[in-house]
Length: 280
Image 1: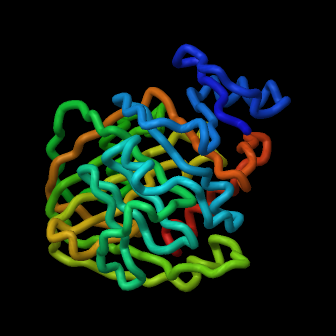
Image 2 (image 1 turned 45 degrees about the vertical axis):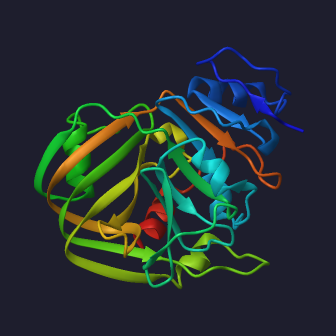
Image 3 (image 1 turned 90 degrees about the horizontal axis):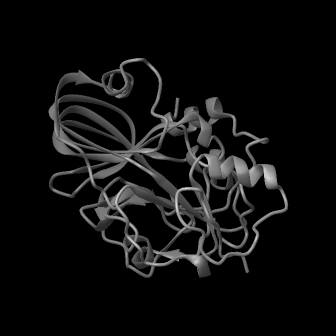
């Protein structure tokens, strides 16, 4: 059993040592990352604290089955994204409700006992609302948020409600074991181009230091106001809207039994991952 490794941001709880790699634990602590196993999670909802199941490194390798239910996930946050077991579509969490983008990018409501191999949520507690006037895309959004050109030093939750000229979304077909890699699964994705649409993008911008744990940079999912369509955002052009952001103080990462702790000395090739995420 591996309940947790306490981060330096809070008083340590009774834990078992996750690994003998003290340097790795010190590295994670410095990033305010806490590692958990399923029996170590609880329903605490603290403002600005992200809760995540598994890692992007594990998902890349085909770890498509997790042990956290959507019911458990929603106890930790009301905004976020991810996927469902078997890489079954794209998961969007908005206003405390979970939606699944089916293969054709139509939205459905998955059962709360459905499990997820990868998801990130936060009890969204944003700062003041900011007005955005387009055209705004992913690149210009980073420039508007962080004027020095660098990404934030902490994971940042993002919500943008607005009028979009275009949003290109995708979803993927549920995979069957034995699972192949994420690259193989995404090769059979389905795309949908939405034009002149109103909706909401939710997601996160992760700093470079979380390489291996996260997709660094922006990771966004989208739902239309009608909750009819959505998916993983490949590209977008915002005409006008409102932006709210929430900088995280901690990241709690639940590791399924089959997933090893991340190792920052074995980084993910982010260029390859970004091509998969953008499907270019």
